[in-house]
Length: 336
Image (cartoon, rainbow, N blue to C red; front, side, top):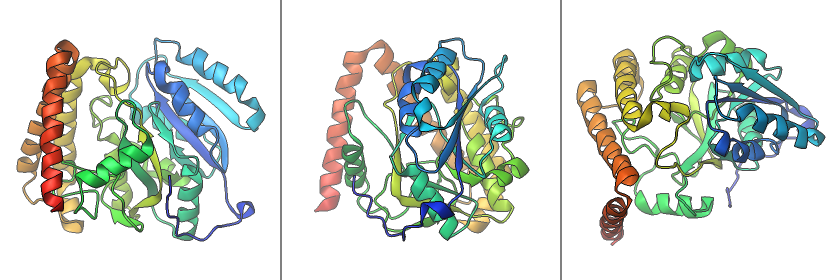
């Protein structure tokens, strides 16, 4: 993939090292793919896997991976929580165990571009800020990264920034943005200074045990409230692996309905807590209950699609084809 890099190269000898911290829970089926993309990153010194009480073969997968990749000269750290504490606690535990001055947060179902850590670190060194992350897209089954980003470009031909006024509605980090931009939130896969994370830390208590996300957004807002901005760096990217219809791991461990419910609850907690700050600093819809209502309806719509896919796959495929056809016609009309 052509990333159209515009930054000057920095000699390797001048750059510090990176620790990748990965929280995981019952995702051994895709963990290996993620790890394979992490281990080849430039400036990497260690990979820290924080197993949040998995009951599958996650320990065996990481042990085999560490042994097979010992020639890279990296440190592999496996930390296990005997009881599930949630992703915020897992991230904090990983940061406390890290030895490098910079942290990159990975996850067990994403793959990094080969230059992901390199581009982010070079950007951070040249123009220090709170956190940086690259372009991000969800892959569909059988889709390559190039195909995914071309799809996003066709779906959003007129967008020049990832977020609309609703922030979480139709957010799209895969847009073909030409230059780095300051944004109100980033994907979870940020590069950040270790000392900043140890100072600000992820909130382990407010959100419901990591159900339905927003913990990473909470950290990012508090980073900004401390005086550090966030930047999206479009010269590199990462991809989320295709999401199965029923995934027993991660935030999906409570089932489809549980994941949707807690996402709505946590989004409401987030908006009540930070809407005033976001409205003051960014072009955000002033009525946060209205925003939450819209976002909740969209999440319920997605839940119904997930239930269709699980229990009536033939009907789901028909509905999806009709939806894709409608969106394709809309895209074509906008381009004329």
